[in-house]
Length: 501
Image 1 (cartoon, rainbow, N blue to C red):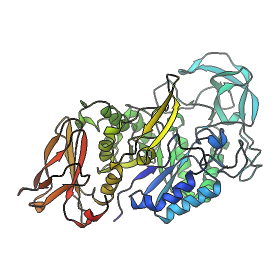
Image 2: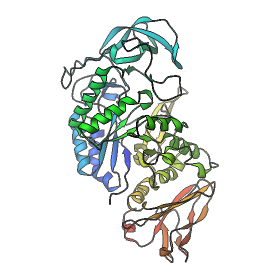
Image 3: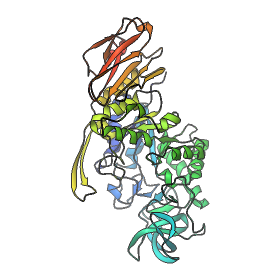
Image 4: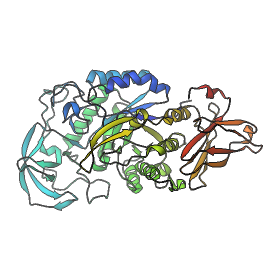
């Protein structure tokens, strides 16, 4: 029987730009597998416009995995091509899947400018013209001279882009709709935050151009045959017409890897309907990050009056559990980042229990919570702040609980505003567990584990409580939790308890 799956996002926004990430991950592979990690999501592996300090989302060359001297460097922020491929091989030897971050919305750092006809648009309402058609110098020609045509001789020009964020000759930033042979309108995307949200940043890719579609499918073939990853994380889907990711995935699955996993980032806080519309538009072929649940966890961590009975309200995992990838934190939500909505440290053990120990969803653990991190950056107030994201010490134990205990039918006890719990009944191989958490005072709750456990003793695996719970003749026990805490009760003296906590 396969163990419960867990993704580890193996990077955070401020990871040092020293080229060590691929080697570090390879070194950690055996240890991660032991701790219950079954897959890792790694950052974009290709060359970005900022060269050796690029996080990869300012993508310059899809074909440069740290092989060519471009943008002032051979290696990327994370390492070289050889180190990347070796790292994936090492992870596979330890039965850990690799999910590659795939950025298909835009390019950055063009090699040459072109004279391009554009209309300047209202950045808050991209369908409202701020100018008549005019000609500007735009960063839209990508020739990749450092690669000299190796792997692909495709040259990107303005016909490959629908919009640009800068008029070089005018020294103006803004949103400029490129007037190319595919028209003067944006592509149709799902999302109602703005009248149209096709444009996000930089040089926005034009998917009405069939040459672009074909080029990116051929790149996908090359990338898979080079790196042999197991799945992909698709960036910025909110800003890409939904038919292309499906076309790209269908191509990859038909020709290369039938079971290629895909999870998409479609950023929306409380608009669950947008995620549901995207799933419908893509025929359920892409898992989605449960961003509404993240915001519930964020809000719950900001107050002890949050009604825990509603923690899964308006979440993707409540309506599409088989397609929901749940998470507590990521590189965009950590303090000082663009989508800052960090979950307070006191609540993170509770939050991780909610995604790791339940039946529904495919959980993703954040590097900054797994290892801890410290960094300094300028905030919205213009001042520099030192940020400490502590390692969540209970996380290792919760991962062990997911690997060896959190199986079987689930019975919920969401019956108090500030204290909820559930029972996992276990199966023929794994013994199950009882979870109780409180965001307020010390609490207790009666929960049923079954008459077959009458007279048996349960102990708190997290060792928050030193008590033992004895199950009565009806299979019911009274389980305890400390103030603003989580406890996970397991059967005393069963073989799984010998696992290191």
